[in-house]
Length: 167
Image (cartoon, rainbow, N blue to C red; front, side, top):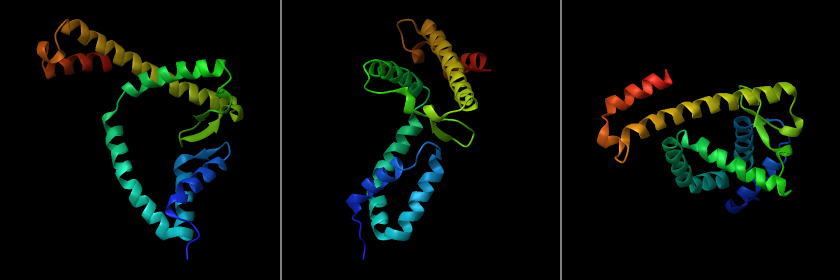
């Protein structure tokens, strides 16, 4: 007989996340939690996963439609984060960053110089990509004027501009 109900699984997951500490790989942590729950509470886990399926599919569809626009939103979030940090509501000190190719997350306060450099390089790559996208969109804006891109350019013309900028 199970000691856990389906509605308790999110709380167990939250407790597990809080106990992870500073260094963890998101995928490995998820695998560990899933394996443990399969051993202890398989039926409840299956029921909970079934409940989560629609949300997971919705998220996956949304993720597939997002592109570089997410970086613009991240920039806005950083500005909001900065204001919250100034007021003492939040701190970068405990924010996790990816510190290696295995996607390990580590809190800023526990990062070494090498960890900071790895994270910095990743942000630089992202910034370069964002600048290229900005240049591409600015070129299209100049061509479109007061019309839509589709009214003044064909897909082939847009692709040629993209190839020139992103190559």
